[in-house]
Length: 415
Image (tube, rainbow, N blue to C red; front, top):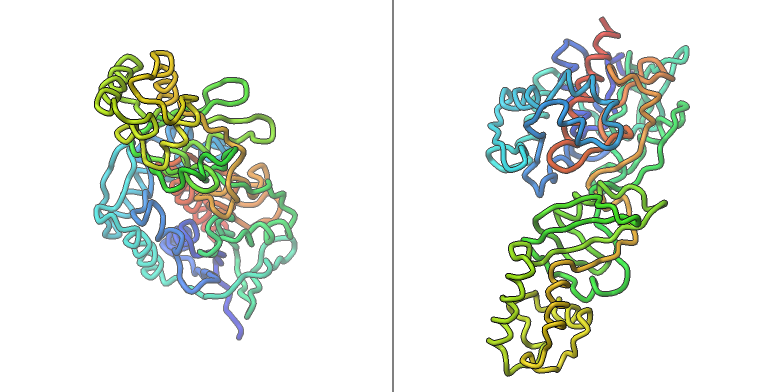
């Protein structure tokens, strides 16, 4: 079929794509969204364990400080469309919001589906056309973007926006095809890797503790030079490959140099107790279980699957009676509980990451409009760019701000 020329064709119906499409339509532009899966907003609908931490209620400078991956590139975009304007927009679209610990912003309903539906509503209000086809090639005319060829048709356009996401969660449609579209037009792609991703560990101790999920632990990550890289408090999980859980995903974003250094994770299993208080606690437990073997006297201190690992690492014979344990042995156990080491060998595959680091080289993109410096009227937004942030709503803020910049830039081109 022959399609009329759209003012803007958006490739990708995720967070950035829907936001850009809706905002462009508000400017009076005719917009077509190309989404290869059956539904728009699939990845957005599962973020934040289905709650959707849509932004962080802070000032632009704090947003930039929480984006280690090319944060300075985003200064103009985040300043133009900061968290406060994002929050105003979603509340205008009928989604009441709340701010929780760490300034994290969620819908009052705790339903990510409400955020997805708000973006769909924004698009419907502007008459955005959504087509479920896969983009295969960006067409050019005189060196400028002029449309998109899909697996079924051709969609002429005055401007084109790539908002295809990264490589994480490919089942939701983020399988990296945007990189290929950009590369075909001459763009450099920084090799993608996982950020906010589970971590693999040395040895089999984590596998022995698989399924154990301590909730109130303090972690410290130290690099090969002994420098503290990250500290956090909260919940984690031991797995068959290593470690995962909220504090681990946050830590992974700070571990960006596996090719040049090593990392060790130290877990404080009893952060509420200092060494003296913990020693007294051990004395009470050992008195309580004085007629038991050491391996059978730790039920109050650690998860069942962790006890054999603690015993092995402590060096205390498993079948020694607890009333025979020396002060030095007790001290060694306390130190282990306060600083349980896990040597990290690397991140899990990028497909298991929440966010992708890497992507379209930001040096080739105008930070004010997200327009390509190589191909006029070609724009980028969201995770396809080489920008990524820490947990706390910062990655979705990147999506919203770059979408706003791209929609504004495309709108000025059409004016």
